[in-house]
Image 1 (cartoon, rainbow, N blue to C red):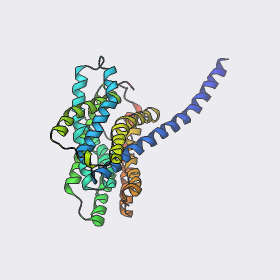
Image 2: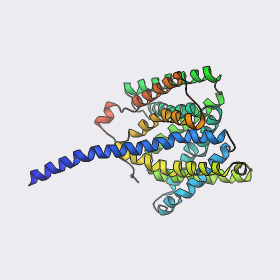
Image 3: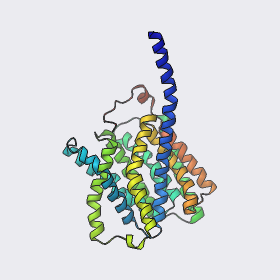
Length: 321
C-alpha cells in the first residue's frame, strides 16, 4: 500500500510540473505584454496632448489609491525602517525613474527606449554587484553583458542611419533610469519587503512628493486631452502597471523560478517593437531587428546563474505575499 501511494505521488508530481510550468509561462506572457505595452502607451501620449507630468501623476496617484489597502492592512507589521526603505525605493524606481523614461521616450522611439532601459538594467546590476557587493559573475554572464553592449551600440547606430543622430539627452535619460532600476533591484533583494509592499510604498511616497508640486505649479494638461486618452492612461498607468503587472510578474516568478525576472525583461525589446508597429507606426529596420535579437540573447546569457549559485542556492529571506 505504501508503494502504491509513493507511485501515485510521483505520478501526480510529474503531471503537476508541466501544468505548473505552463501556467507560469502564461503569467509571464501577460506580464511581458503589460510591461512592453507601457513603453508604447507612454510614448503615445507624451508625443500628443499629455505631458510627462500628467503620465506620472496618473501612474502614482491611481496606484497609491489602488494599493492603499495593502498599507492599511499591514500598517501594524510595517516598522518605521520599512517606510524609510520605501522612500529610498521611491527615489530610485518611483517618480524620478518614470520621468526619466518618459523623457527618453519623448526624444527617442518606443523600440529604442524598450531596448535601452530594460536591457541596460541587468548590465548595470551585474557590474554594480561585482564592484560593490563582491558577487562573482560567470563567463556566460560576462559574455551576455558584452552582447548587450554590442547590441545597444548597433541599435543606436541603426537609428542614427535611419533617423539622424540620436538625442544625447534621450539616451542619457534612459541610461540613468536603467542605473536607478539596477540599484533598486540590488537594494530590494536585500530588503525584507515583499514585492507588493514595495510597490505600495513606492506609489505612496511618489504620490505624496509629486502630486502637491504637480497641482501647485499648474503642470496639468488633462483639460486639453481627450477623455479617451485620459481613460487609456489611467487604466494602463494606474491599474495595469501599478497593480496587475506586479501580480502577474510575481506569480510567474513563483511558478518558474527567480531567473524568470531577467528572462521576462529579455523579451521586452521584441514585444515592444512588435506593439509599436500597429500603435505608433514605428517599423524597425532589419539592422534594428538584428540588434534587438543580439540584446535578447545577451540578456538570456546574463540571466544564467554561476555554477556556485546553482550548487548553493540562496535561502529565501522574504515572504511571498
